[in-house]
Length: 117
Length: 452
Image 1 (cartoon, each protein chain N blue to C red):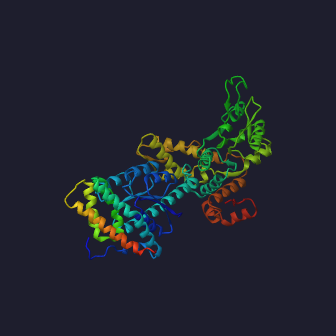
Image 2 (image 1 turned 90 degrees about the vertical axis):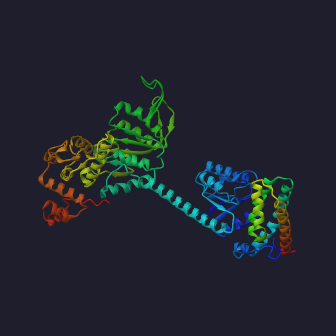
Image 3 (image 1 turned 60 degrees about the horizontal axis):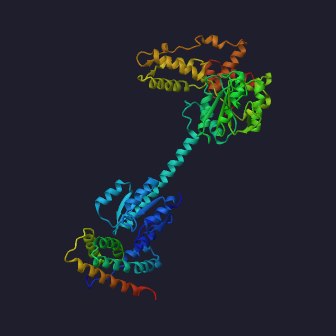
């Protein structure tokens, strides 16, 4: 994930909201409620050597990452998905999983700041 | 159109919310989200108009859910919305009956929006087709009655009125005019159409058997009654009973029939227990029942009870070009049934048919045409192949012994009826002055038929 680029881009959600201001905050809430658990499950599956399960979770994470414009992780999540599907562990997989966890955690922190306190 | 009920099956909460919001932007969509295959299948009986289905679900696969939807109702459109970009998966699901396969990417929103709109249009068209089909079935399927003459169109309008309620219908017409066809058209276009059409010909059953035939009998009711038998009225319960040649029913049975119609119950011979019956009654006769009432041969109370909606079928000779339409229909039908090549009817043969009086009406025409097909040599029915049963036209015409003036009146009246009271045309055909016809009308020597 590039350090320089934005962590996420809510342009897609903004278009989808069709002028409904509550929609984006509902989507952020939903994202923060469900996605951290998915990321943790993916990491656990990797650590347990259950690559198939890891790939399935990556498949589920993919549309959320796309929807929130987390462009720095779109290629990473797809690579993890493919390797999981093929049950193929290569040298890069470990760093990809780590990168996903680190990148998503940063996104969660930033989005958390946008929530009304 | 009513709301389009869209069920979304998507276990990713974030994506499910996005789809729900997007599709709900159209107020004509009623969207419901399910996060598991099991939850959706429990709600399937409520029959959505369409389903969007994620391929990977926590408790089952999209393939399994698709199969179950198709087993329930193969016409429910299922759009797969999946993160799986594997082309083989997509092809397999489309083969299994999926309506479309949309990959989750930046174009999903627009593609899904368009697909839902297509489905909405298809549902609307399907509803429209179903509605029109039902309307056609109910109102206009009189295909068993051939012809397009004005007089026949009037009959069709009466039949349409008859099928709307279960009013008793009385059909009048010369022998062979198709009274039973009209009765069947009413039955098969009415709400009773799924039940049997029960026809009884009063003239064809010996007088002493009519009562048991109509009302049935108990075992031992008479010699030979070895077991209970239900009658035609019971057979036609919640359906149509067609009493053909009702004018032939003797007075004793007319009284019994009147009672059945009034009380809506019958009593089998040899029984004291009445049985409730609910039948739509259609009667037919070639006689003028009003005349029969005057002569005392038909009960007046039964006459009024049966009158209901009267339909008077015109004799074939008054149906103009219907004769040719029917002739061609019978020729085609006979050729088809006998594996013969199709035959044509020559122009002179058609003219000959149009000039003939057809005392036996449609029944006679059918017999004449079938014989014509057999006698024809080169797949064309010529004049000489048409053998009319009543060859001597003049004898047919002067059968009734009456005055020349009366004949003149009858002839002019016949043509006025045939040409919708067009005096000028009739005067031209008969080569008489139109003032002669006007004078006869004015003097009430001819009463014009003003029935619509």
